[in-house]
Length: 131
Image 1: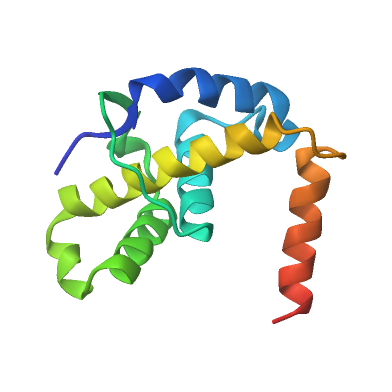
Image 2: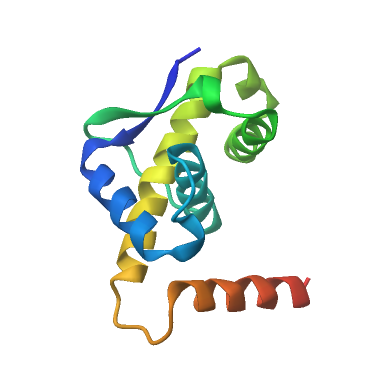
């Protein structure tokens, strides 16, 4: 099993900026930022291969619930058999996070009115009401 989750080296600056701009992420550690970016990539069904890998999150810092989320998402892209190959599970997570951080970065730098938090809150409420 890999001892780190990787990001594309060009994404480090995006993670740092997003942490400063999105209030509810300001006090989160790199693990939580990575998972948030991964979930954003998953939500938008976008994966992107990493060009230059750079260690970002030590896997020993992942809690059981973090691993459950990562594995569940990997299963949605592959079959249950992927659970025997944790390196491939992490590769899917890394590709989703790479696409997800790009999407977040574009969104916070867009000219849309309102804060990211307000748009995110509206989206979550809309999804909850419509399910």
